[in-house]
Image (cartoon, rainbow, N blue to C red):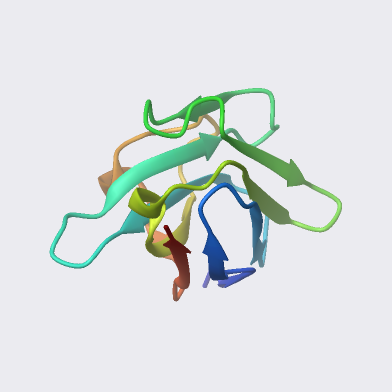
Length: 121
């Protein structure tokens, strides 16, 4: 059973930065998704098993950076220049069958509990 534990969410002002962390019980291709109230869960960023491949949603490209520390089985999401529209519950997810980054949520078979990010204007 894969276990994922997120941390690092909080309440910030527009323009501030936050760093989310996801500790996994093993090494997998990983993704970050978010879900705002009343909206579908959407892709944010993904990273390959090795860390060499990364994808970003257009809405966060240039502001967010996904990275991983394979020695610690941890994936990070550095979020800069935050906007009110970034407010959501952020989830990390693990894809236990592929080594490449995937943007669709249906490819991920394990999910964390989520961490709230709130950006005030």
